[in-house]
Length: 309
Image (cartoon, rainbow, N blue to C red; front, side):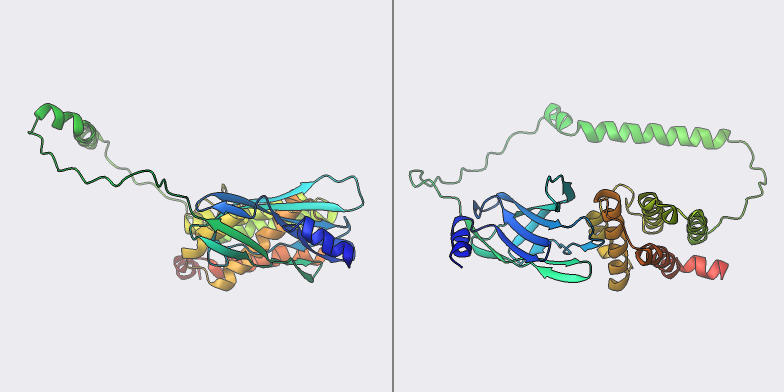
């Protein structure tokens, strides 16, 4: 008891929850900062390498209402000389409200078992004003005489843009007048997006990658197909976005809350396999394929449903 109390006094920002061989914790690089400044918040998990699945907390745009999440730098695996393996996830947070604000506990799920970290307290201070400075009156508005040269310099970009538009229109008219007569071209029927993706998923499943031990390749192929589908279906940069960026981008999409949650779970599992080198179970691999097929089937466009039954 005395040792625990002593550690709490010496390391007030180092708070953790522990279960058997797994330890979760959060810490801040500072607990006091000025309004608008940014602070790093690190979440970490020390776990046995035999752990099969880790579910990290879902992070939104804010923490507790007064703390804003500027960036989520994702999960990194930290090399360790001991028996436990460490994973860290770093958030960059800030606040524009002065006062004492609490960072709420974070909930982790390790191999299906929930674990929760302790809450943290942050103090956001205001910027002190210079008491030696004096208030200055507002100066009167000065009206300058009209100058054509000044007007041209101020509107040079618009003038050049107008000239460029006129040249482009003239070129288009010229090309339209010189275009060859159209010929009848037989166009091949276009395969709907969802059919192309489902066919690619079926081909991937027949390759039996994860059954041969290539879990990373299996999950990479599935998420590439899934992200490509989302990018073409909803016109968002899914292939270049991180999981958090993509989920935020899809908040204004036609996807339901359950569909976004299903998509986030699939992408989080794939990230753990690809970047944290987590080995999924057979059930997780099979569920990944089943969930992807269901997601594509449920979210295909209405025009594809009408045109192809």
